[in-house]
Image 1 (cartoon, rainbow, N blue to C red):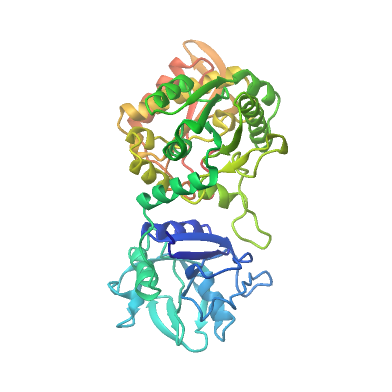
Image 2 (image 1 turned 60 degrees about the vertical axis):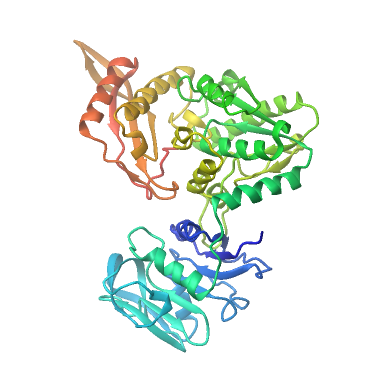
Length: 511
C-alpha cells in the first residue's frame, strides 16, 4: 500500500525531528531530508515542510534550497526559518527583531475563514524561537495571524498552497500546533491519515518476506525495546530462519545477561547467549576518549558477532534494530543541518569481511512508534516500558578508562537506583535513568575514618524521543534514601550527586 508522504527539509533546527513526529501522530508518514539533498523524484510527496534553523536568512551562510520543483507545485509550509526564507527571497523584508521573540506568545489576530486556523481561536499559545523577524511580507501574500509582538506571525501566498508561520507548531508549548498541522496537511493538502502501527506491521512483514525470502537472518539482541521489537517482527515474517545472538559485553546492568535470556525464552525466539565480557574489557583497556571507547566496543561486538555468525550455516542477512533518530543523528551535512552529535554503533554498515546484507525493519520509525508497534505485536508492556539503555552500555557511563572493578561499582550503584525507582513507583514517570561513575575521588568520613573514594552522579530525565529532555524532579526523600543506600552498600563510593541538566544543552549520557 502506498501512503501519502510529507517531505520535511531540514535546515538544522533542534526541533526538526519533532515536526516529523507530530506529523506521524496524525497517522501521516513523514521523512526528513537535508535542505541540500532534496529527493530527485518528488512525485510521492504530497506536501513539503521547511524547518527552522540556527542560521539567519540575512547572513552570508544563509541556507539556500532549490524549491523550483516545489514552490507553487505542491502544498508548502515554512516554519520559522522556512517562513523567513520564503519572505526574504520573494520580495519581503527580514530584519533583526527589536524585541525578544523567544518563548511563549499568544495569537492576538487570526484572519477569519482561513482553513489553516480552523478550530484555533484567538489567544491560542504558540512558541517563538527566532532573533530575526519578518518586517514586510513577500509579494502576493496575505497576513493570516499576528501575536502582540509579532505582526507577521503567519501568512499565505495567493494563487499557491504556500503557508508560512514564524512560530513552532511542533513543540508542546504551541497548544494548537497539532491542529494547525492537521489543517494544513489534511484540509488544505488533502493527505490521507492511514499510517498506523497495524499497517506498519503488515507492510513490514511483507517487505521482509519479499526481501529476505528463504534466507537466514542473524540478529544481535540487546534486551532493549528496539532490538526486541525488531526480533518479533522478523520472527513473524521468517520464523525459524531468524537466529538471535545476545552478547554479554561485560557492560550490562547487574544480572542483566541471565534476566534477558530468561525473558526471551518465553517469547518463542531462537536465542543464543554469548558471554564475551573479558574480550570487551581487554579491548577497552586504557582507553579514556568517549568516541574511541564507542568504536572499540563496536569493533569488539562485530568480531564476536562474526565468530558466532560463522558457526551458523548459510546466513546471508544481518538484522539491526536501527531506528530513525539513529539514521538522522548520524548524517552530518556541510552547510548546517543537524550535525552529528556522536557516532551510533549500529549505523554506518559493516566491515567487508562480514559480507552480510543488512535488513533494518525499524529504520523508518521513532522510539515512541517502536513501542506502539510492539504493543500491536503483543509484546509484554513491562518490556516495552523499559528505559532506553545505550548500546555501549555502562562503558559510556564510566568516565575515563574502564576496569572490571569500576564496572562492578557502577552495576551495584545502578541496581540500587533503578530498583529504587521501581519500588517507589517512579520508574514509569522517567524516560531514562542511570548512574555515572565520575573520574573524581573525594574526601569523606565513614565512622571515624577518612575516606578518599569515588563520586557517582544519578541522572533521570523525561522525554518522548530523547532528542530533547528535561531532568525529573525526583522526591528529596527518594534521593536521600538512594544516596544513603549507595554509600552504605557499595564499597568504593562515598559521594552521590544528582544531575539537573536539560538536553539541550547537555546530552542525556555524559559521554
